[in-house]
Image (tube, rainbow, N blue to C red; front, side, top):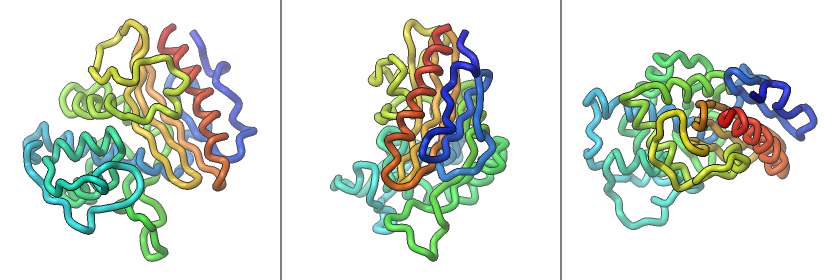
Length: 261
């Protein structure tokens, strides 16, 4: 089975790449880095827990407010409907990383509740700091979310093993349309959003990505002969993002080999 010696040397990349693949290897796994939209996983976990416990109704309809709308990733900024169910908004947040859906859900759930939920899951450094803002001004928190590769790998491992609210989050992550980073080097069907048990014939991926200027992040679960969780966080100067993505894909190739071994 591939091990830590198979993971690429990331020292030569033009920026910081931190990763954690539990049981295989890690690098700068405890360094706190900006997460961009990977931070939305904390919100999705809180929403899923609310659905399972009954404190949130998946069919509750939420009207989008002007303050919710944000440029960047997503579809709602271009769509005409102003009212969506909480379940719709969660799916949009996971599938297309919709910034407007994220802001609406975060307004409904509350940042304090999301923070408390993250702490209850054992996250110390990984947290959402603010709403999505385009542009982000000096008076705002410096970024949407921060965290560490170790905590995020543990988070997705916990989600993958949790049979109630975790199963919901896994279903939403399986619908993620961005497979351009770590999963780009993993042979899988990106349209297969049904959550399988291990072992799986072939390879299956569920993930959440984050993209911002100088930031590319990807956290996910790969299932094949075995399950492998990963978190890869990068930070670099403007213009070097794709070189960091190439490094992420090298890690993805190893993750895929581990999952098939």
